[in-house]
Amino acid sequence: MPKGSVNIEVFKERLRLAWSWQGKRFSLYMGLSDTTINQKVASMKAQQIELDMATNNFDPSLSKYKPQKYESISVSQLFDQFVEYKRHTISIGGLNKYLALQKHVSEFFRSKTAISVSESVAQKFKEFLAQKLEPVTVRERIVLINACWEWAQKKKLVLENPWSDVKVSVPPKQRPEPFTLTEISAIVQKFRSDSNLSHYADYVEFKFGVGLRTGEAAALLWRHCSPECDRIWIGESLSNGSESRKSTKTNKARTVPLTPRLQQLLLDRRPTDRRPDDLIFTSTNGSAIDSKNFCNRYWKPALAELGIDYRKPYNTRHTLISHGLEAGMNPVAIASLTGHNVRTLYENYAGLVNPPQLPDLMPGLIPVSDLVLKADSQVDRSQTSE
Image 1 (cartoon, rainbow, N blue to C red):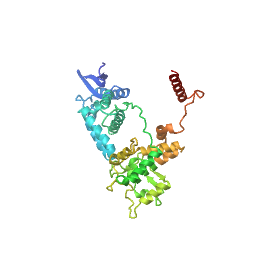
Image 2: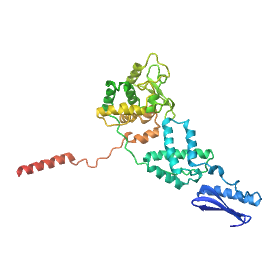
Image 3: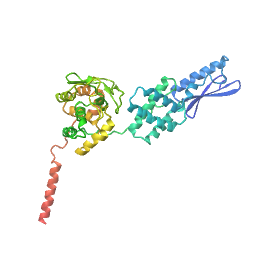
Image 4: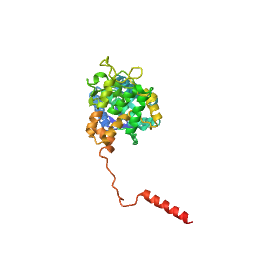
């Protein structure tokens, strides 16, 4: 090594600087993995040290050159700070996902520092999660911890993000079948005729009729409804009975014109002494509807008694979209009514938008059913002749 120069080395997949000054050897761990960008960062630090040695400003304690701020925080501490930052801006359901990940982070990383997390360590954590969770949940958790590092970079708590290239493959999952028109009629009638279910009859029919997200239906207030009840404004959402309101999933509001039947449903339901901020649909005790409680205590038993294959209440939304597309409605119009991103609607419902038809390559052949009947008749004649 030339006198007065600083060498960049790779040790255990991490960058470090090495040099000599006044006959003594020094080394400085950068806390960075060996990437092109980090090599440039290390090079800049090396130049700073070389300049200080040349101008007699060198700090032999290395305090001047150590990235102390980055090295001090552990992974658990970093994620704890991120959870606190997110706590006031997300729903209870969203917060629960962060809290669940918080436990896995604490178990896997223990006291490991955030700056020591390389891409290989990030991959090992993904594999650790894969042993405990479904692929779709693993992908969701990696997205969350990636967001944590992006936030930490802005706060200058870490230098690089090892999670940006961590990918999780999720096998395709068949979408549940929409409810048929016969099933819809049977479900609504069941809720209307059963005294244990009748409180939620309007709620169930309205969800089928408008295709609302579960949280959107729970958040509807009478001030969201037009004076004639022929239009409904949808711009807020509630999560699992919480009183804390948030915007819709896409952060966009929409106004939906209602069918005459749904208009009459609201007119019949509207109390004369209503207040603008009263909920349109409530639980049996008058509070916001808790989706899990509704599903377990009312929805599941109703479908079981009817002998209808179980599908989540959210499937009412999928049902409206599917029937609308099959009836030939414009996908853009459906997206505006349901609050979908048009691209997302096309991606999720492409099979219903002008579905392609397989060509019939054997139009002149005898149908398989006829061949089976013919073979059976030949067997019968053979047995008779015997």
